Image (cartoon, rainbow, N blue to C red; front, top):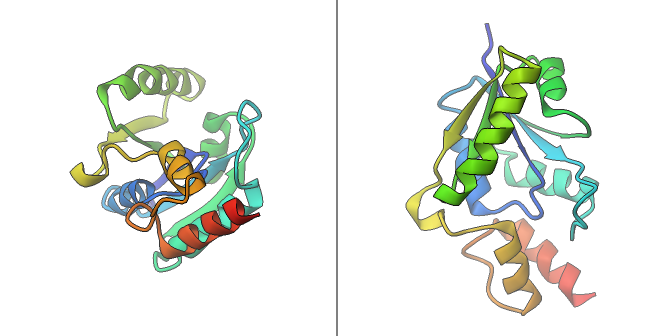
Length: 160
């Protein structure tokens, strides 16, 4: 039986922290589906299709990773994908309150769906997509924080 995990997020843009969580998730699951969420409450820098394409490029060396977009309930998406595990990254204690609420709701919606929390590597703990966007917007060096393809995409967005 294949163990499938879902790693959901907006990934606007994907950071080295996201990459770290995906690659470490492969120790827990046979396949990881990176689920790029449609979030109507946010105005993303990158369109949904761009975020999917960036993730596919960043993770192209991982044959056990699939990148897909989704809209709707995560529990339903996970069920449709055959996943029994949701991976979530926790950078700080402040993330836990929201993430635990989401995990409990997902378990109510699907009692067989477990949430696993992973802490990113220490040198990536402070990193967030919003910080990366801000550094890029102010023409700072985002090279240490993102894959080169993402760095190039950010430069193109803010040059326009």
